[in-house]
Image (tube, rainbow, N blue to C red):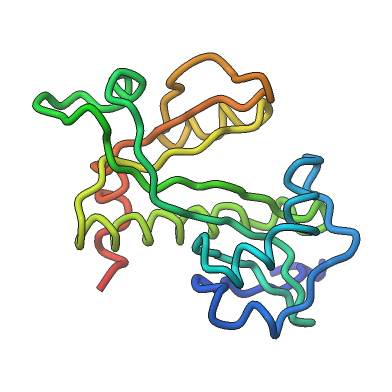
Length: 183
């Protein structure tokens, strides 16, 4: 390690369990207005109502400095065909959907986003072991498409009216990357 102090954090893979004990940054800014607004006005409500699964990055002060939210969903077979090469698929494919994902700018570049994604992959594998899914779906921000492509996600269509690009990674590469980490 060098002399530069790196802000510490821990990942809480089950944000629902302790979300009320954490502090939420009033000035959270991940660089995307929609994510910032969700963090400030919708995240705690969604966690409390158990509408999503939350993964959080928590700093030593107990502040949520990064988050990802997951739910289950379905994709139309025709939309997913670019990423799912199998035959004998139903018309609606079950997936884990990453709904929201952001890391405060002050904590970007520390690997927090990668850790949240790793835990997202772990959750997808856990779901797949109980009820088979076909992959992990998300809508990528314009500046994040190439990053997700580097991880194996494939674009399913052109960006939508909000600028998000629907992307999917099939379960097989997730299993290859994570199966050893899941008991």
